[in-house]
Image 1 (cartoon, one colour):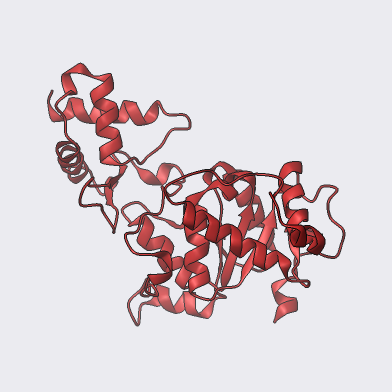
Image 2: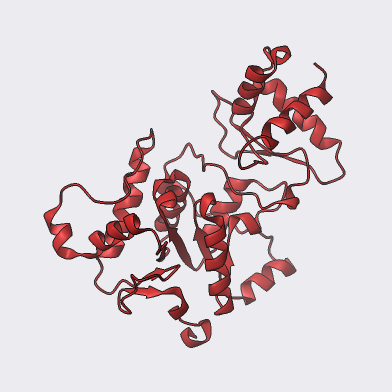
Length: 299
């Protein structure tokens, strides 16, 4: 099969996913193509990456192949940015891969060179919250960002801020390092997400304060949050109610994330914001996001 046919097969494979994706590791994509196309049974991930790279180079500045900044020597984990224009759709980041421990990551370098006018604009403006969420909650996360920005708080979202051709992992870690604090949209999906867990752990290692916005219309999740807020329930120990963390090879990361949430919610003055507000708001520790303080009031 020639290069053009391989590109078309790859395009069809991505477009056929639900929801459609604009990225996939070369290893996984080559495996999918070998299964679905008998004529591609000999296609290796290295050969696929070479074909996609050549195809991207023939574009007019609107195609990109993304490499993970921490590729695995054994699997050649390469992220394919797109064979088409990435800007046409928000791109949610794939799993945050790192060979180093999350707490050992260096503080990211500035995104702009000294003297860059764009850097000066960002310096003059208020630092943004880094909004961490699972891509399945993208709609709710965008609503949260809109509410806070109307209150004068800039918010950084991966889907809106990562441009085509940029290194996703590197851009996310840089944004965390330049943020004023972490903003966690806590849902059943984000509680299960190792990507969200790693974002939160990286931010915690940089001593960023965490602000928690809970998906207020999820009764099982609210049961778990209320359990964590209740000193008597915490003292009893035992199995926690609500959403379990899934079993993975990175369970230690997931458990570190959950432990950080327990510690945050154990603080007696911790306010948890709800979106949507629902019937759980008590006006004290559980407040609707509409009550989030305006930036002008904080100044």
